[in-house]
Image (cartoon, rainbow over all chains, first blue to last red):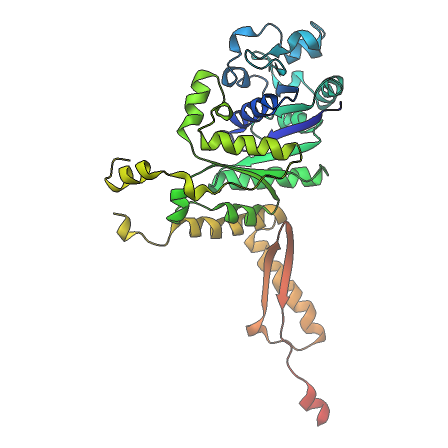
Length: 265
Length: 83
């Protein structure tokens, strides 16, 4: 077993990196893969709370690097999935406590015992981002169909190209098909045309995502959620399976449409 | 109120992004680009007669590759040669 190390990055904050990591991790683990998530956002720990594991943290990644514990001890096992683990970020340390070679060493140690290592990159293009991409076999760049997010994604893609990282793939998150239809939101085709990289998934805007993170149970576990379906599809594509892209136009059911017509939504 | 919408916003978003990304990627401001165009034309006109009014030099992108596309019509000299 040699794990694939996948880093999720965006440049801009708030576009859905942490949500994507949690959802992909749950989807992969639900399919039987052994998954280790690493929160790369030192000082702004977040993946633990989105995954619902905040009360179980004893050691963090800086404790591992500084030799206060073994890597094994910092790996928190998920409540529901026996093959899903989280290595939390340190909350009280500064970013310089971790270096790119530390990240490579930790991933190398995990590679033989996992199928996937998912790294949640911090926003920005500084040290934390460099740490997160250093061990990556693959980088997924996530963006929203919105000017600032697309511009920042382009910067990140430019850096990845300069570093000669295996060509990144794009996740377009929070696409609102109705706004696209009204020509008031960039379409997935627009974003792809602007950024010029391969697409790995389009995730529609979905209230269930917020409900999921409120509960600490990512939406990819909800069979009815469209966003959850989109994340499960991305997980399959990460495993090399071919999955057709969802038809986002079919999103609203009759009831939704009636509500819209009567102005209740 | 949406009946009175101006140009649709997705279109302006795309156009604005196209420009800004080209400048971000090439690290070339529009001023620098103009300066470069002038210098290019100077060099070329030293060797051939060009139609300055019809010149088009712009940055374009094709996937993630940027290119400088120049269309520089030359003035015909056949008549002079014939004479």
